[in-house]
Image 1 (cartoon, rainbow, N blue to C red):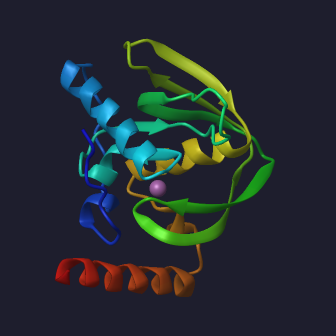
Image 2 (cartoon, helix red, strand yellow; image 1 turned 60 degrees about the vertical axis):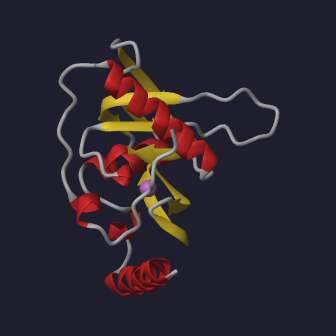
Length: 172
Ligand code: NI
């Protein structure tokens, strides 16, 4: 089932999310719903707080080429356990901040651990777009958005645009 994606500014996007204690069918369904919502948007990552669920769960799939096999990842309690000194700049966007993009600098390579959909502990090294995406999504679990890395003026400009968008959506 597709879920509604919250648009910034929303207090739920600023909260630190709680760790997932036990994997349940309910949580697996939530993860499946998040993947469906992400692919439909379309996007390459989605965090639970973006649909108003304040739990540490993200989904991602950075395979974008037509014809390539999709690689949906479901991560409960994801954690960056090591990051490179070398950095990388990507133009980032966010499904909660539609049509706004800005360059963000992050560590180029990260080691991430998480609990997968089957409850197994996983660990993997991510580079390139996958690295940027997984860091962006984990940030969401700590109430942090990519615009928080920008200069205040630019951040305020984007926030005002989003407030206007929400007013227009409320009216229609
Ligand atoms: Ni985002």
